[in-house]
Structure formats: C-alpha cells, structure tokens
Amino acid sequence: MTEPAADAPSVSDLEQLREVEAACTGCDLYKTAGPTVGGEGPGSAWLMLVGEQPGDQEDKAGKPFVGPAGRILDQALDEAGIARDEVFVTNAVKHFRFEERGKRRIHKQPTVRQVRACRPWLDAELRLVAPPVVGMLGAVAAKSLLGQDFRITEHRGERLEQDGRTFVPTVHPSSILRSDPAQREELLSAFVADLKVIAGARP
Image 1: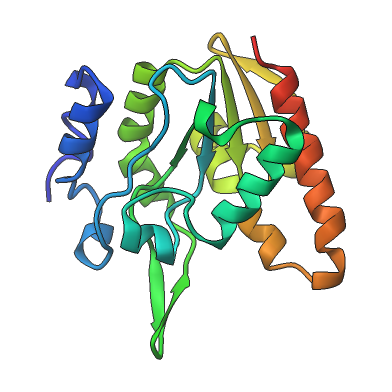
Image 2 (image 1 turned 90 degrees about the vertical axis):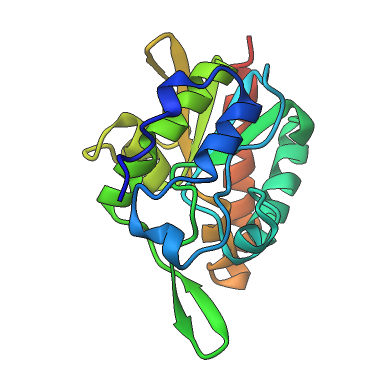
C-alpha cells in the first residue's frame, strides 16, 4: 500500500491532481469502489462545498453530487441564489464506502483513517482553487477540516473564520432524503437558510 496521497503536495493544477489521485491506493476503499471521484467545478471558484464521500451514482459516474443528494443540493443552491456552475464541489473521501445488501450497495460512513488518508487530496484542492468560502456538508466533512471534536449541532449555519477563510457548517443533503417525508420541506428550508449564510459570505 502506498503512502496516502504522497504526490498531492507537488501537483500544480486541477487536471494534474485528477490524474494523480486516480491512482491512489492510500486506503483499502480503492479495492472495491469505482474510480476516484475528485472535485469538480471552476478552478477560481469563490465557494467550495465539501461533502462526505461519493454515493452509489457518483461512484458509477465518477463525478461528485450527481445522484439524489446532488439534486437536493442543486435545488437548495438555486433557492439560496447560488449558481452550481460557480461552485467547486468535492468530498472529504474520494471513494465510495458501502456494504452490499442483495443487489444494492448501502452507504457506510468512512472511518477516521480513510478520511485522514484522503485529507492531502482535499488540501491540494483547497490550495489550487483557493476558495475564500468553504461550506461543509455534514459531520464527516466538518471534522475533516476543523478537527474530530467539532460538532455541527453547536455551530450549524455559523460563519467561522480560520486560516484566512470563512467556513460554514451545515447538514449533508442526503440527511433530508433520509428524513420523514412530512418533515422534508421544513428541513430543506433550514438547509437553504444555511446556504444563504454561505451566499452572504461571498467576497
């Protein structure tokens, strides 16, 4: 097994980063998942949204946020006044962790080790895109960037300043999909409100 993301600090642009990270074997997820799913969006994006990991459809397509959670995200971004094509979207972990149940592949939360193995790729994306604002979608993303003791429940929707950037934690859109259908409209509205905080942090 190679050193996790050993070449990440040396890449000079996003195209090179995608080529290098495609060959990552820094943790065991590459053995069962599809291709590495790197970030996508403009290299000069003012906003980077960081999720947990690719889902089933993202794993198959090799692109982030193209499945059901991605559609929720697109709707919420639109309602918050943020265009998807001005955002760089990525994940804390670049491979899909799952367990098989019959013909279905069910999401499993990545381990701390898997998150740490992928952190150099995320650091490289932050360095190359240099977004002034970072939105963290869910606890895995927030803990990856702000430490394992960070709690979204205590800071959701807040603007947090660190390392010259504004970080705003919120929920992952997949949590809305998993909720009681009777609560989804309310939860979506709360998610949109958090994205409006992010929109308000735009330089």
